[in-house]
Image (cartoon, rainbow, N blue to C red):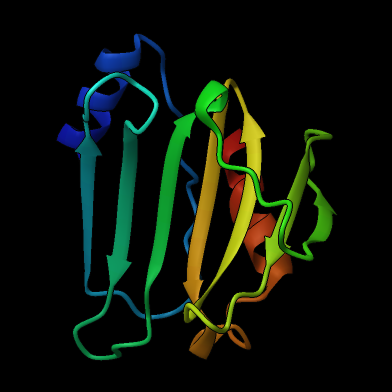
Length: 136
C-alpha cells in the first residue's frame, strides 16, 4: 500500500492524505494499487481492505484528481457535511452490491465503497467520521 501511495504522489507531484480510521469491522488484508493509464484522466489510487474470514467485509478507498472527478447526477444522494466544511454525498447502490461515500479535499476526489451487506454496521455517519480522520 505504501509503494502505491508513493507512486501516486510522485505521479501527480502532490501529497495525498488518507484517513487514519477504517470501519470498525474485521479486516485481514489491505492492498494498494496505483493505476497509471494513458494520460491522467483515469489514473487512480485504490486502497482495499478485505477479510478472508468475512467475505462481505470490503472497504475501498479510491482517489483521483479533482479535475477528473466522477459525477453522480443520476443517483439520489444523501448529503453530509464534514468537519472542515466540505460537502459529501452518500449513495446506496444495491444493484451493484455496494454503497458510495464521496467527497473532495485538497484537489482530490475521494470515493469510499462499502458492501451493501454491511451497511447496517458501516453507516454513512461512520463514513463521515472516517473522512474526518484525514484531518488528524
